[in-house]
Amino acid sequence: MQLVNSEILEGLTFDDVLLVPARSEVLPRSVDVSTKFTREISLHTPIVSSAMDTVTEADLAIAMARSGGIGVIHKNMTIEQQCEQVRRVKRAENGMIYDPVTIGPEATVGDALALMAKQHIGGIPVVDNAGKLIGIITNRDLRFQDNRKLSISEVMTKENLITAKKGISLEEATCILRSSKVEKLPVVDDDNTLVGLITYKDLMKIKDNPIASKDSKGRLLVAAAVGVKSDTLDRIEMLVSAGADAVVIDTAHGHSVGVLGVIAKACEAFKNRDIQIVAGNVATGEGAKALADAGVSAVKVGIGPGSICTTRIIAGVGMPQLTAVMLASKALEGTGVPVIADG
Image (cartoon, rainbow, N blue to C red):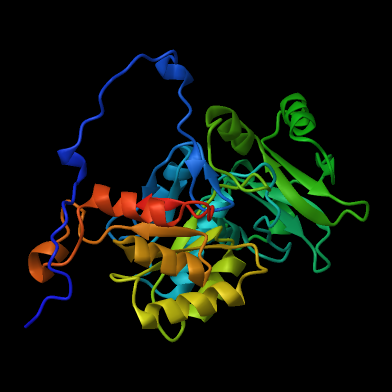
C-alpha cells in the first residue's frame, strides 16, 4: 500500500501551549470577551453548552442565556418535546411576552391551576373568544379556592383591571406596576384585544442579568440541535416556528458528501427566514471551508477533543483541537463565519 501523503504534521492541543504574559493596560473588570456565535448572533460570554441529552435542556439553556452565553437543546427527544423546550426558554424572560398563555372564562379553577403548574407561571390573562381581555387570574385569586370546579369567571379579577396600551415602554410599565402594586400588566390595543403581557418578575430579571443573551423582542436566545435525517427540514421548520434563534446541524463527521448535501438544502430552504444555521463537526480547514460554502452561519470544530469522548481511542480519528481550530480559522478568514471550538 502506498501512502498518498507520507508527511506527518505536528498537531497541538490546549495543554501543549501556554500564553506568555505581557504588559497590559486593561483592568480585569474592563475586559470585553464578547464574541460572535454566528454571523448575526453576538454573545457577551463566549460559552455554548453542548447539545447532549445529559447536558442541555430548557433549564440549562435559560441559565446559559442569562449568563451571556447560549444553550443548544439536544435532539434526543420527539420534535414536539424539543419545540416545547425551546418555547420554555423563550417564555422564561421577556421585555414583553408577545404570546402570553391565556385562558377562557368558562374554564375551571382546576384548569387554571393545572395550566399554571405546566407553564411555571403565577397568573393568566382571561380572554373571550375574540381575544379581548376580560380579566386576569393569579395565584392570589386561587389561593383559598377549595372548589376546583368553579368557573374562572367567578373568581377572576375583572373590576378596576390595570392595563397598558400597546407601545408602552418598559420604564413606563415599571412605574405602573410599582404604583398599582400589581405584578402583571396586560397590554391591550385600542379594541381591548390582548397583545402582550409585562410582568414585574421579568423586569427584575432584566435588571439582575444585564449581559443576558436576548433577541430583538427581549426574549432569551436559544439554539436547538438536529441530525442529518429524512425529516431534518421538517424539524428545522417546527423549531423555527417554536422560536429557536439558531439550529445546529450536529454530525460526527461534517465533511462528507451526504452531510454537506443536507446542510446545503437546509441553508437554501431557510436563507430568508429568521434563523441561523450552524453545522459541524469538522477538524480541518478544508472541512470548515466546505461547510461555509454550503451556506452555514458558523462552523463547529472538533472531532474527539472532549474529556469523555472516545472517538480518537476507538476509531483513531481526529485532530489535536488547537491545531484544528487554527486551521479552520485560517480557512474561514474573510468569510465572516465564526468558528466554535467544540469539546
